[in-house]
Every structure is written in C-alpha cells, then in structure tokens.
Length: 272
Figure 1 (spheres, rainbow, N blue to C red):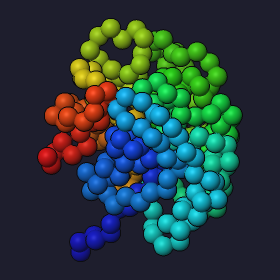
Figure 2: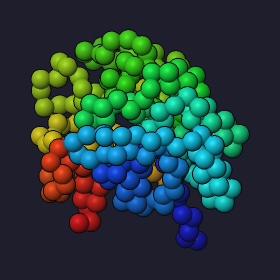
Figure 3: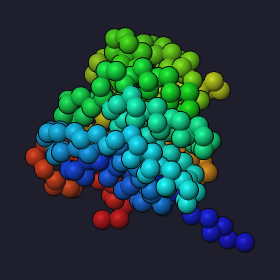
C-alpha cells in the first residue's frame, strides 16, 4: 500500500524581507525537499542583502496564538527554531513545545546576521540555554554562536571545536552540529562540521565554495535537517542529506542575481 502521509515541518523564526534567510529560506528549503511547510513568525526585519535596518519583535502572546493555532489543526513532524530575540519569546515557545510534547526539534541559535548585525539580545542567551537547549533534538551553532552560548572565546582549532561541542551537548540537546566554516586556522579549501551525540562523533568535511552569496546558509541547513527528520530520517542521515543539499545550493548561488551584498543561496537549484 502506498504511504500517502504528507511530511510537515514547522519553522519558528524571524521574517527576512530580503527573502534569503529566516522563515522565507526555511519554507523554500522545506518545499525544495518535498516537505509541506508551516510557520510561526517571531520577528519582522527590514533587511536586504547588505544590512538589517530594523527589527520589530512580535509580541509573545501573538507568537503563542500562531503556534497553538497551527498545532490545534496540523500534525507537525519536525520543528525548526531560528531567530528568538527576547527572553519572553523563548520561554513562551518552550512552554508550548513541552506541553505539546513535540519531537524532532532543530534549534539554530541565530545571533548574528551575515552582515554582522546582532540579532539576539544579551539577556536572551541564558533563557535559550535553560529553556530550549534541553528540548532540542539537534542544535546547529556556528563557531561564534557556540562561543556565545558557552560564554567563552571562539574556537580557533578543531580540538577547541570538539571541546565546545562536548560542552554544548552537556547542556541537554540530544545532538550538536558545530559548523566549522569560521575556523580561523582553516587555510585550506576544506571546511568541516562536527556532529556529536552520546553515541557518536562524526566529522563532515566539505569543500569551501568561492562565493559571497551565502546569505541564509545557516537557516537553510537547519531547515533542511528538519525536513529530513519530518520525512522519518534519523539525525545522522538527515544531517548528511542536508549538507549535500546546502553544498549544491551554495555552489549554484552565483546563478542568482539578487541584491548587491551577500546574496542568497539557490534553494531551487535542482528545479530552475
């Protein structure tokens, strides 16, 4: 008998008016990977490929209304969480996720935009550590985000990267994917990510792709992982398939001509 179950993922994140990151990137990735996407918007940004000009936070009560309304009607197989700028937003979302007993939660701790603009308030970091990390199936920080979460210096080599991954795992998530693209001692063309869980340590190498069009890569990778989990893949397989997808999306990014700054990756590289 043919399985007609539609895989469904939910993104809880900020809106990017430039279309390259945030909720817009998540929904594009879900769609490209054969998953129906739903969304809860946590913040509105006035953003393009060069800058984040303004951020308007959505009130926590309305975030709760969005989330509960989706969950009251729609079965959600996986959740991707992105930009959460205020403590009350974090605690509100965490309470609902616990109450609803949702599984397959991918947390991308968005803190800094590609342009360098800060997106996460300092007082929110402690709430993120306490409330959401223990609920996460997987967290996907880059090296600057890992350092902020641990209140330490950014890792400068693979040994420090592995040590920080272990410290993050101890905070409660079931698995950690530390993205090594910022590694200061990476003079080569290689860029390795580290997937760590209680069961395994796995390095995921990839070639660096020479392009400035990398806006939304973190959002896209985490949402692609959530899409894999929504389709029933285990974490290592979902991560590996998402890595393949984002690598191809970055490689095709220069085919798009969007803006004059850090342009977006090509979510629909296999279709356009």
